Image (tube, rainbow, N blue to C red):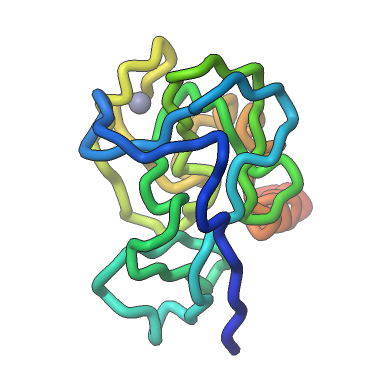
Amino acid sequence: MRLYYRSFPDSPFLEIRDSPVSGLGVFARSAIHAGELLAVCGGIVYSTADCPSEGHAMQVGEDLWLWSDGGNLDDFINHSCGPNSGFVNGKPELFALKDIAPGEEIVWDYSTSLVEEGWSLQCRCGSKSCRGKILPFFSLSPEDRRRLLPVSLDFIRRMFEKRLAEDVE
Ligand SMILES: [Zn+2]
């Protein structure tokens, strides 16, 4: 199965440039209001077994990855433990979680799309709420899971509900 998501080719209100967090980042060109759609994550959906190892891959299902060659705007959006964007509607579409000022970096919490056990990355996002490590959703503390669930992808919300029903949480 292959699904294609189209990223905004040229966003009038976002730009890619050097980030103080890491490498390149995506920044607001102008003021953005809470609730506005910022980016539709772009790429091709692969199963874990078929996903190319090169390029960018973002988990979008228990066994599904949205792969990109690195040419989509969303590939440049960095992680933050204190994100200003998130998957409000459960789809791989980033919405502003608060009003964003011109020049502010757009960031989302990578744990809201990731359940691959054993995966971790040191975090230096600089946010006051930095957890020090980016971890899969179900390795987060119960408090962080509850806080991030409303901005997580649908498959994570379903897994969460299933675990609740099975009393794993
Ligand atoms: Zn952090």
